Amino acid sequence: MRSIWNGAISFGLVSIPIKLVNATESRSVSFRQIHTEDGGRVRYKKVCELDGEEVPQAEIGKAYEDADGTMIPITEEDLASLPLPTAKTIEIVAFVPAGDIDPLQMDAAYYLSANGVPAAKPYTLLREALKRSEKVAVAKYALRGRERLGMLRVVDDVIAMHGLLWPDEIRAPEGVAPENPVSVRDAELDLADALMATLGEVDMSTLHDDYRTAVEEMIAAKAEGGEGVVPPATGEESGGGQVIDLMAALENSVRAAKQARGEEDGDGEEEGKGEGKGRAAVTPLKPRASRAPKATDAKKSASKAAAKKTAAPARKSTSKAAAKKATTKSTATTKSTAAKKATATKKTTAKKATPRKRTA
Image 1 (tube, rainbow, N blue to C red):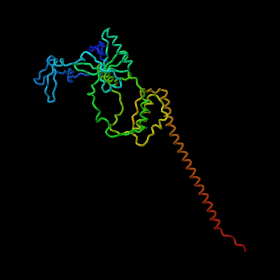
Image 2 (image 1 turned 45 degrees about the vertical axis):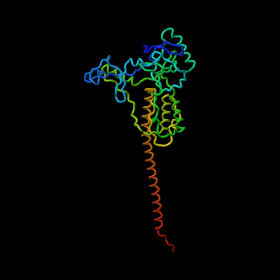
Image 3 (image 1 turned 180 degrees about the horizontal axis):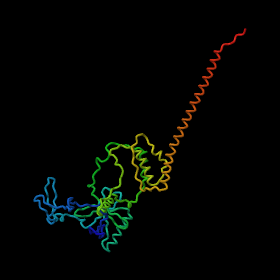
């Protein structure tokens, strides 16, 4: 890797010659500006605002713009005359626990490489001292014309340096937290803990930029004369500002996370029951891996569904016939009973109407 700065680490009376190498790189896909009519490249020209003429690089200098818009010219000689003891030295000023460094201060990262054979011994000494103390070194250094703050720590067998923002460059989080007081129940915290435990840990090396991959595939398709690729559907967009049931959201999230990890949720029905009604719909987490159903399983499911559809009408017809038969039998029985009563009534009436013979 190419070094971007050469100097030395000042460690008390020990000086360690080192080379500064970028530890990170941007993989973002960059674009150029073109003229859409003919595809020609559009470039920037540095033009003077006073005469409208393009200015060559050799005639471009620095200036500080005052509050009223006045330009105060600053030459390279002016800057060179300023005291900058860290121009070629990374000066360690303290050793502190890593927890004392606010992550908000973290900036660019670099590797420090021993510059030459004589630097190997003091370099290794500092590296092993940092390992054994379990501390990091706070240092000052100068890069690209200004003094900066840095933190040195050990990564594998290499000393790495993180650029740090100065403490006064960190803004106070005023007006960022919710203004109205909010209380969180223990049950909600328990579900949040369960969700965190279910999601578990992740191998950071497996994470990648899905958007960048999609952009690269689109560019490759267009380069081959295609029209690009259609991105996969990501589902319906959720409406903003929707009030949701937090307990239901947590419960469904835990259940979905368990399903995604292949864990059985035996009490899923109970977990889904929360307090209150009118729960908002919660979109489950997307499973990490989905297995396509086998053809045999699909056939079995289809035959079962067909059997259910056939059995349902049959059961309906049988029940209707039974109900009709019962109704007919009931009606016949009722008619027979009524006829018997009518016959009996006639006989009784006729018996009463017949006159008795008198005996002489």
